[in-house]
Every structure is written in structure tokens, then in C-alpha cells.
Image (tube, rainbow, N blue to C red):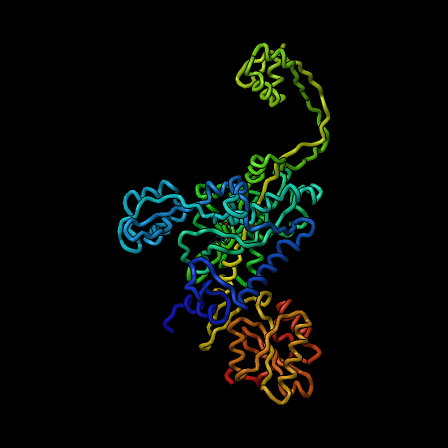
Length: 579
Ligand code: GAP
């Protein structure tokens, strides 16, 4: 075969309806893909597995929300995306093409994945050739990746397509905190489409301009971090970590990685362990993933620490399928400042504390007599004085307001001791952020096998679509009618199913293998006689015979509990692969 494995995968994806170029009939636009009947459902199954593992496994702790894709400008101003969500772009003065400046260097063998702005510029100062026409490229600039739109008719308000689902979560935080009766620790998850106007998306299905994210913003009190009960079973799980500057992967339990400070907080560590479990459920071998610490100099503007979950794919090497960031209080603080709303939570003290309170008042006429037109400004500043500043002022004989020394004798100060039961604080956030499209590609890449000149797609049984193929041995003598009844029966058991009666049985098995249908159910003359039925395993091509009344149990064990086919019935050899 002359095509590369990658080309054969793309061909399969197109031919069998997993994914393909979007707007194909108009020539397509880079960075957008369509999912066909098989791909759309496998993608939905991946999302459902994530939902089950990251949300439903944590009742009363992690909740799902949904916010709009189109987002008013203020939100992305506050989040820092309008100023910081940029990539370096460079233009060729000769052929006028645009390129991503760091990618051009990488294509020329310069490792530019983690270089700083200054390092990037220094390469371009020396002159970098255009990958298209060979002319010397210009100087890189910053290009903002937000897709801009307008909200409302005519000119109206500027809006953006969200570049991460996270911001919708931060902006509804206040409401969620109330709805959840001021919970101390909780996560809000969102699954949805995002848009990024990538400069030159070349990595096929891996770098898209529109894709689906699955994110959790996990809110917690940074000075009261203790393991929530539902996370306890994750503490002893081993994480595979490549820390900044290290050449070697280490395996540490969540507890060890947090204790040693390698992973910045316990919730991050536990959710990282869960991410590994998720990949294992998706059939990604353990040697094909690890967490890579993002160097400090390359951290996103909101992050204090980021770990990228890397998965190996044949064509592109290590690919980031998820980013885990410790966002601290960056987002809530910034949205509180920009919106003027209080986005804090309440922390009760273990026991009430006595706090000295000072109350400052003044006679405006006295101040006006002394400070004239500056009085308003001075009063505003007096209102903002902190208790410590007033207490110090009492010692010094004056306070400073709007740069002016104000004598204590011009103020009335009452100091009282009050009992306080708690205080307000801005919660910190740990965020796992998964890209579904990259995960789907990794799954297809991992599962793509070739056997005896045929393609077998070993996608995990949990996420395969359809899960069962029903085939009559031949299309006559009532076998077809009986097989159609089986389709209905299997559907009632809760499995997705497809029926195929066209062509030799071997060819039909091959068609099912190509789209990764885990099990085929074959109806033959013995089925007519005694109700027994054949099950065929996509991965081993082995067959077993089960009694009609055992079909539901056999399918449940095979598809939901991952049982071996040989445990489900008696070995059977008559319906060959090559017929
Ligand atoms: N809220 C944090 C955030 O959005 P990110 O690392 O920019 O973090 C998270 O994105 C995940 O989204 C990535 O790990 C990747 O799986 C996916 N992703 C990012 N850009 C992508 C693109 N252009 N095409 C496809 N998936 C992408």
C-alpha cells in the first residue's frame, strides 16, 4: 500500500463517515470538520463517558451548567482574552501569505514550542525564510484568536465566540454559589463548542477553528484544602509526570505529588488521576500518555501552574488532549473588579474572633473650611481608610487621605471591639479542560489495525457506535425476518444496533470491523430451529454460540462489563471470515 498509515486513517474516516472536511462541496475551509453518522455518535459517547466519570461520579460536588457561545465583550476584556489570547503571526512580503511565526521555526528544525517572545524575535531579526516562496519573512506581530461578531442589529454591541467554556462558568459563579447554598467546595462543568481563529491550522483534525471542550472549574478555599470524601480513592493513584526542566518521567501518587509540591493542590492532583482513568477507559495504553508541566515562562496569562495531558498519536507524536491549570483567584477577582459584583465566598472561623473596629466620621463644614474644593476628593478617600491606617493615624495625630494630612482633631473616631464569626474570600480554581475532537482522533489512531488486508477499528466497546451488528446468514428462508426481530429486541436492551443483509457474510463482518462495531450477532438456520445465535468478536474474530434467552445477558456482559467472548457461550466455527 503506497499511502501512509495517517492517509489510510483519513481515508477510512471519510469513506465510513467518522469525520471529513467541512463544507466539502464548496471546497472546504481549513480548521473545520464535519462528523458523519459514525463519528457524531462516537463523539457523543466519549462526552457521555466523561460526564459519567467527571460529573455523575461526584453527586453534590460537581454540577453541569450551560452558557451561551456568543459572549459580550466585557467578559473577554475582564478574562484577559482581548489583550492576551494571541499567537505570533508573520507575513511574507513577497507571496503575502500569513504564517504562525513559531510554527515556521519548528518546521525549520528550531524547537520553538516553548520559546519566549524575545527569543522568537531574535530569530526573525536574523532573517527567516518563507516556507512557501523562500523570501525573507517580516517581523512577527501578535494576532488575537477571538472570533469577533456583533450582537443585535446594525452596529450594536461587540461580542465574541467563546474561546473557552470556562468564562461562562465564572460569570454564573455568583448565582451557582447561592443556588448551591454557599457550598465551600464544588465544581461546575460545561461541555460545549468553542471557536479560535487559529492562524494556519495544519494538523488536520487536531488543530481546529471550532471544536468541543469539556471543562470543570473546581472552586475551593485555598487555606482550607482537605480531601473531599469522593476524591479519597484517587489519592493513592500514580500520576505519570514530566516536570519542568526534567528529562525523565516520574510516577508519584497524587498524595506524594501534592506533598512534594510537584502538583500545586490536592484537587488538581485528584482530577489529574481521574483524567488518566478516563484515557484508560478509552483504550489508550498507559505508556501512551503522561502529564507535561508547562514551563513557567509559557504559562497562560491566568495560570499559576499548568499540566498538559499528552497522548501519543502515530502521525503527530505527542499531542495535548487536555490542559489542567491552577487558575488561583485570577478570574473571579477580575470579573468582580470589572462587573462591580461581589464574587466572594464566606469562610466561617472555627471560633469567633474579637476584632477591633474603627468608625471614622467628620463634619464636612470643618473640612470644607480647610480644604475648599478638594473636600469631596478627601471625603472619598477617608471612606476608604483601612482600620490599620486609622489606628496608625491615632498614634501619629493625623491620617493621609488623597495625599493630604488630615488632623485627627478634625475627625471623630470611635474604636470598638466586635465579635466576628467569619470572613469573605475569593475562591481559588483548579481547571481540567479536555478537547473532545483530539481525544476522538487519538482513539481512532490507537484503535486502527490492519489484519489480513482488512481494517479493524478497535474502539472501546463503551464508546463504539453502533455497538451491535445483526446479520442474517442469508437473505432468505425467514432468516432476514428473524434477524430484523433481533434488531428490535437488542434495541430494547438499550444497545445501538445496525442491520446488514447485503453480500457475503465475510464481507459484512469486514464492514462492521471497519467502523469498530464490537460484536456481530448472526442469525442462521439453527436460530430458526432452537433460537440459538452466534456472537462474533471484532477483535479476535472468534465466535461463540449462545441460547436465545441468554442474548441480553451475554451482550450486557460483553459490552458493559468488558467480558471475554469465550465466557459467554460455547465456541463456534462454522461461519467463516472469508465467505
Ligand atoms: N480553559 C482552558 C483552555 O481552554 P486550552 O489548553 O487552551 O485550555 C484545552 O484548551 C483543550 O482544548 C486542549 O488541551 C485541547 O485538547 C483542546 N484544543 C485547544 N485548541 C484546540 C484546537 N485549535 N483544535 C482542537 N482542539 C483544541
